[in-house]
Length: 488
Image (cartoon, rainbow, N blue to C red; front, side):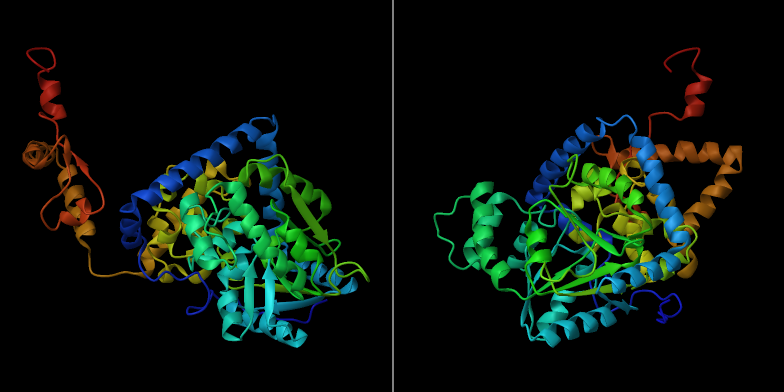
């Protein structure tokens, strides 16, 4: 049994990693909405991904049963998470691996940096990993003089462009082919000016650039999509083959994994390997599914380290409503159907986890006061729940977090609270309600083309973020009174 004590539940610390936004979502969203090229890029990409997903999901008559199975497996796993993690540690250790426990991002970065320095390497190659972005590993390694090279094509584009990822599955979704070509010409050594913006040519240029890294790197860093407790097996799924190269060529492999990625058995993996590819890339199966358990003499890395990361996850587990967010398998299906994400993109969320799942997972990991605007980055339309392969009820968690935000930030009555109190008083009296309805008709003077887009203070706070419909020519009571005679 593990003798490691990770401490009582604590939120992810500020000042390290990529979970804490520098500005509120509404402010960042306004900037994103003004970028018409960004909106075109996002609209085209999400439309394509949605169509592919719908086609392959429609092929399965038991899709809803698979979703229910995935939901049940995740819920049962979270209920006994400690047992499964201990079993995972035992099995990894039995097969020659070394397990490290990290309470937070800072501790995880120290562990990984120390492991790399012990090998004498000054550079590493990386498999696409959300959790290493969450903890800010690349930046921590750079401070220690270690270069980290992203090998996933989209992650490479983001890295060379000195940019940030904006999508869980397609980090460079906000870039089009012409923009990618300019980045390669500017940042990639040896690329000729004749490079076209055709996908095949761009991919070949990236392949030639990365080939040298694959053949010389002694250390690789990966994340994990799943970890099977019963055998200590780690699983990475990907579409390009770069992950297979990272997982087999280097001498040392270091995997950083959030503790929620563990699943009990191989039979559980069967369910998720049907759900994940269809929901993420719109494929029936992932082109590359790599699995390994510890080390095998003479085959692949001869030193394997698994870093199990908390970084706020036990705090999420302690939340009876919010813990469902830990079921996420990072497929990004919720992003691709979200009307808010499609218009603002991922950078507006200020976190490595954007979109609907980011709007709940980020404030749960950091504490809602660190990201108070994210639970409001949603229309609550429910499309994310319908798309989620493990049926995470994101709208209900958003409402839960909004309530918590309100409770934790109690201030003198806001203009909205005063307005709601006044509205309650007016609506409690039929006579006052009738007078108010007639008075509202004056708002027609402010309307332009059927919408009121700007109101004077304090109502300007409302129209700063949304329009209001123009009041009708007559109230419902007036229409009802004259419905049988004259003009209705």
